[in-house]
Image (cartoon, rainbow, N blue to C red; front, side, top):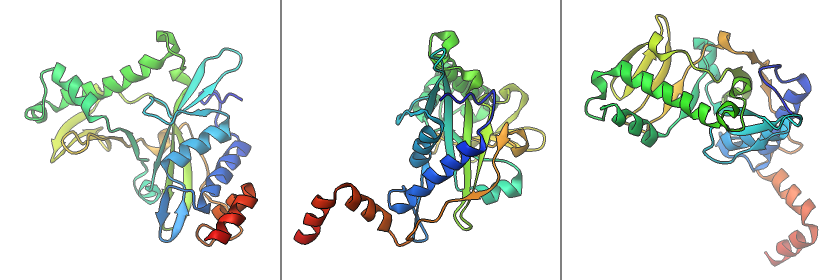
Length: 263
């Protein structure tokens, strides 16, 4: 199945499939251990999106984390999967939180082509902000079918899963892959971060001298679509690792029994 996010948003059934797949990671296979609970992490989210929507997880530093193929044309739709424990903050500020990239080396290489470096970048913040945002656009163009790639970037999206470890609540939001024009923002260097703002809110942060992360804070009101708040489905037995052990024993009953006897 191909899911064209620009044409429609996830259906109720697709969202439920995603919720249930994410719920399975509570069995001990999830990347996160929080307050004694095993939960899905960012890689689990990517794999769950691929399974729920009939796509292929890239499992790499690819521009898009999941690709969905249109069987009629062979053209792919890209999904950039972002997961943050910031649901409570999003409710307070009205903005989601997306870490776009932490490719410090690529960012600095582009800036140095323009005569900017670690010593002088703070004196030309607007140029830095514009260069970084344009570089992200060039990465998208490099995989676009219009430029010889395989992805319809216009129909692609960011899928942001915001959650709260205190309450166990999750919410999924869909955003356009297109960023606001950097030239329309006010840029300034504050401490170790470059900040891009509108007249009222902060939209970007780039930590050029401490990790290289580029963070984007889109307004919830600008989301193409968002789900209702949901929770993971409880497993039959919540004890840590129980479901993982039961699954292993079910898949390899004889080998598991022998291992238990030898143990």
